[in-house]
Every structure is written in C-alpha cells, then in structure tokens.
Image (tube, rainbow, N blue to C red; front, side, top):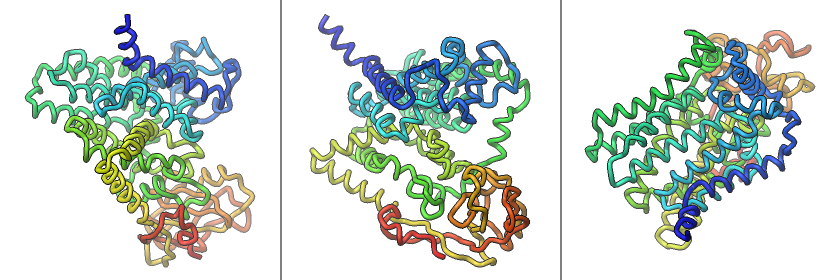
Length: 494
C-alpha cells in the first residue's frame, strides 16, 4: 500500500491536476466561475470565431462560413457547446492545461526535475504574472498547440533517454503528435519535422532506425491526418480555406529577423510608443535562458540530448513566429499575440530554476553568470532610429494626423503608402501606429523608398489626400545600456 502511494506521488497526474487547480483559481480570480455569463472575450475576433465553429460542429454544420480557423481547436470544444453554451472552452482549456502540464512534467524528467517541482514551475511560469495568465485562461488555439508540442517533446525525449529501442506505441504516438501541430496552426508544421529529425539522427547513431519503425511513425501520422483531412474536406472541399489564404497573403519576412527580434524580445522603444517587449513583461525569461545554457554546458550527455531536442524545436519555431509580418509589438500584449510563443514560457521557468540552483555550486554558478552576462550583452546591442533623406531606405515614416481618432481605428485603417518602389497597404505591407502628432508608419514587408506619400481615408482635413511624411528614419546599430535602463539615450531623435 505504501509503495502504491509512493508511485501515485511520482506519477505526473496528481501534480498536473494540482497545476489545473491553480488554473481554476486564476480563472475564478480574473473571469469568475459564473459559467452562465458570457465573458467579455466572447466578442473578440478570434474567440467569437472559435465559439461559432464549436457550436457549428456540435450540430454537424459544416458550412465553410461557420469555420474561419482550422477546426481542430473548435472540435475539442464542440462536445461542451451545449453543456456550457456561454463558455464552451472553459472545460476544454482546463483539460488541455492539465494535459500540457503532464507533458511538461514528462519532458523535464530527463533533465532531473521531479514531477511536483515541474508542475510548480509550469503553473508559476504560466499563471503567476497577469499578462501570461491571460494567454492561458482565455481561449486561444495555442492552448491545444502547447499540449501537443509538449507531449511531442516528452515522447521524443523518452525515446532519447531510454536504454532500449522504442516500443510500437511510442513510435505511433511520436508520428501522431508530430503530424498534429499544423492541423491546429499551419505555421507550426516545422515543429514535428524538427522533433522527428532529432529522434532520427540519434536513433540512426544507435542503429535503431529501421523500415518497420519508420512505418510505425508514418502510421501514427496517418491516424491523425486522415480523419482531419475528411473533416477539412467536409467543410472546405478541395479549396484552400480563407484563413490560410489570409495568412499566406500577410507573409513572412525572414530578412527582417534581427529588427523583429529586437523590438519583440528586447524592447520596442522608441519605434513603438507605449508598448513593451516580451523580456520587459516577463523578465524571468532572461535568467531562464541563461539557466538552460548553463545546463547544456555542465549537464550530462542525456540532458544535453534532450536540450538539443528542445532547441531544435524551439529555435526554428521562434524564427518563423518572429518572421510573420503581422507579429508586431502593438499586438504583442494589446491583442495578446504573445500567445504564439506561450508554450515556451514554462521552459523559461525551468531554466530559471536551474539558474537559481546553480548558486549552490561554484562552477555551476560561474557558468550561469557567464551565460547571464552574455545574454545581457546582446540586449546592449540597440537598433535605434536615425533620420535619413529621400535617397536612403526608411524603416519609419512620421505623418501629421488627427489626434482624436480611436487608437484601433488608426491602427487598422485602410491606409496606403505610395513610394518610388510601388504601393503598400496598412497591416499587410506596413503597420500604422498612432503617436503624439498623428501616426507613424513602420515598414514590415520592405523598407520605404523615396518620395513616399500616404493616403488614409479615415483622416480629416487638413490631413486628407496623399500626404508627405514630416520625418523619415532608418536604423542604426549602437552599443549601450538596454533602453529600459537608459530611455533618454534611446529617445526618438527629432
């Protein structure tokens, strides 16, 4: 009996359920547990479409007009559409949070983290800070994605850490989980490819890759993709959905990664007034990254293999998200686009634990401090605006404008900018952001060429018509204290 109790304590289920209780308390605190009341987020763009899709699936309505996003997340909620009609994602999100916590616990085991500690890290890194908590207690497709990605990492980590060849069930599970992310969010398709590539590389070195095992992985993928494909065909037929068309039209700018990484991860100042970066909002990610680097240096071979797996999944994933042209600092917290990256937050929490733990051993502490300083030095590379003339490409244009406009009206305005290289539209090719004198335009698809003029139908006289900017700014790289410590040095030059 005592042994049974000990095994129950070691199993990830009880710690994951405890994390679920923390989610429930946070939900009660922030939203309330009156499940008959329609919450304010039900009218938001994304969430309203999730709900419409879940309700349509519950009544077997496959009309394409009812399903904007890929239907996987709505499908999870469809059984609850009649049970909790006002908040159909309440129970699914709670279940998915527990599932993600359990998968995270499994994934952290080869790194030497016990189940209760891993559950505490998961709960604290996702729920303790209000900006992060909102990404988990409100419906987002990435809640399902997070559970899938951590389950995939846990399964592949188990395959890596095992001293024996992987069993049939594990191989089928790996294939199924690798195929699932793009069915929730198409941009996440590289996750499964990267995870399986690491597993194949390590397995090949051990002589474990055989046609039979490859076939079992493919079988797992087919078991997931085939029913989803049938559902997709029932809704959209052989057409590409409007959501995928919209995302493809928005596009990716991989050449813009250094600037995007700076304004999203380090600081958006002074380019985007009043916004905050990921590190400014969730500061534990800095020492968390240093802790993971430290573990990669001083850890065992098995720990390094698992960290290599996580890095192989996380780094391309982050690069794709940062390259997405609509992922900009104003949307990071204002529209909660930080949810794109939320599955990584518990990883930062785990790294923070290893970082704190290093203080007990001198060599570990020295490595952790070196990694902390190195990452801090990267934050001291500042990308700041510099005035440029018509003969040089510009990252930002400043326009006089109506100061009484609603922020969102100006941000989403159907504005156009015409320059020597062609015509750009707001949101798709550049982003318009209100400031103290009107609006500023930030280039996201390509730099602004010379003789730029803006046409914004929402402006009032005297700002109507094709309007010239009163200032043009390019980029300059400088070295100094991070802008959150030295804001005067990072002020916009006038």
